[in-house]
Length: 91
Image: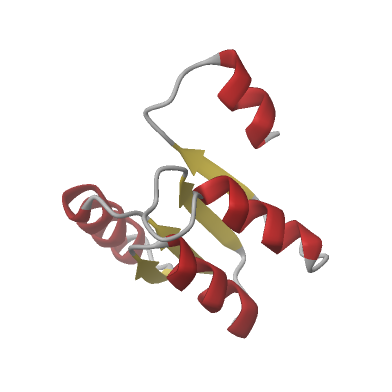
């Protein structure tokens, strides 16, 4: 299983990387929305772990572009935003 982590908090990203790799997953990590969009356009992933508050492109825009390309890859959204509005936009 190949996983892409799109997270700009390096401490959080490093923890996720170590945990997932030690569990045997192939994991790539990017720290901006534009990097995530490029990686998702160029490679096939089995899971995207997506922070919404990414620099250079908001996570929801990354998700919108991903779905616009017809991808059904599962997405786990990580965010500090907890409003119902943000949750609905993510869905």
